[in-house]
Image 1 (cartoon, rainbow, N blue to C red):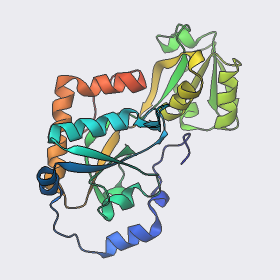
Image 2 (cartoon, rainbow, N blue to C red):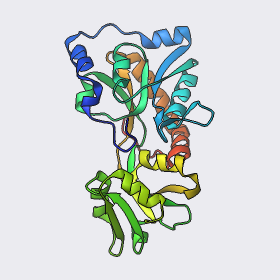
Image 3 (cartoon, helix red, strand yellow):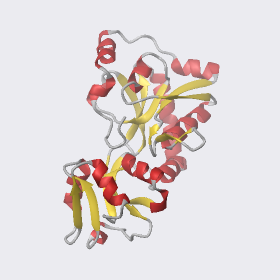
Image 4 (cartoon, helix red, strand yellow):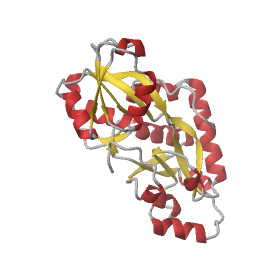
Length: 266
């Protein structure tokens, strides 16, 4: 799994598992009943995609997706089994009942909706401008006179071009590695990139004190549920709605992404 790309291509689902699912009738499902009866829930999570999911210095999974998994399990009164997955196998884990839920930066699209169901969104996934804490950037106008690194042709490059003020020094690089290297080495004062890339920078270079500054584009994450598990999906939606109302979603997002979750689609 690459930390530098949005993991939303259908090819990552695996052609075999997709064909199998489309050709098989939906079976009667009772995942929620099983969870409530056993007081255990299996949740698939990422472990190499900071700040959403990664292995900490204590060798335990941590991140926003892990916090969300633990939160849901607590609300269900269940013990959680965290199952590390990759972008290639996470949906197959739902199809084969190896996981009850997938909380792994999962974007929703029509192709995926053919093979799994989705809850309401629980967190943002976004492209933004990031810079060190000491760099004063509160609006796009503040970018004037500053250098911003971006990968040529990437989504963040396109979005930055829409809002960049006159006088900003946009430095375009040919790939993400070069863009990151320029920012880390101080060749640029800011970087326009995805939340996951910024999370990797923060994790590997804490001395830079990199933080979220300005939003370029939002693309929320949803929780994956196996087809037909409507009772479980609706119950998780209740938990998400309560977490929105209480401010718990905003707190989790603020902790890991440096910004509140804000308005998220149902």
